[in-house]
Length: 148
Ligand code: SF4
Image 1 (cartoon, rainbow, N blue to C red):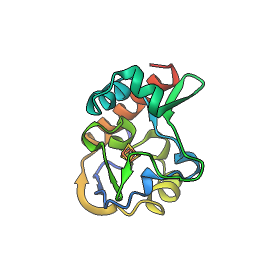
Image 2 (cartoon, helix red, strand yellow):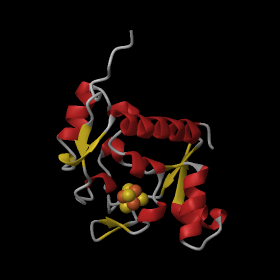
Image 3 (spheres, helix red, strand yellow):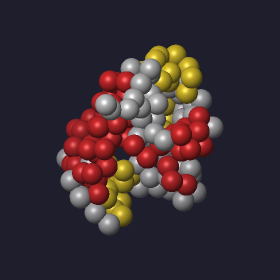
Image 4 (cartoon, rainbow, N blue to C red):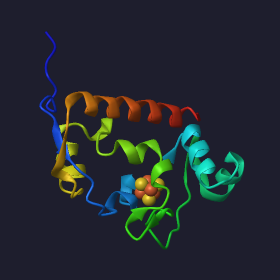
């Protein structure tokens, strides 16, 4: 018999537009990108993927991430507390807060509940929806770590 996860009855979450997850906070400091993310974002901005990568990305080992300004912790696409490339935003920005590394009691409390004002607000995400996001985020993280 399989045990039910703690999110079996769903989790209430709706983005409140705080922009907090679009600003560097230690481990949330980088916006990592798969090749598909870079392609989608480049297309959205009318650039080739290589031009986009050159202009907006840095690399840490095999992993591409958005460049950061040491004097400004905000993501370069954060404008007026909103994402200026929302339709084309990276997978990690779509799947938050349903990331594998925070879906345990300790991290959920410390890194999500105490941090993100969208928790316990608005839409209730079903177990299926949460697990789809978890699976998508896992695929994305695996791709980033293998340079894909
Ligand atoms: S790409 Fe958009 S959603 Fe993602 S961190 Fe930057 S501003 Fe936020």
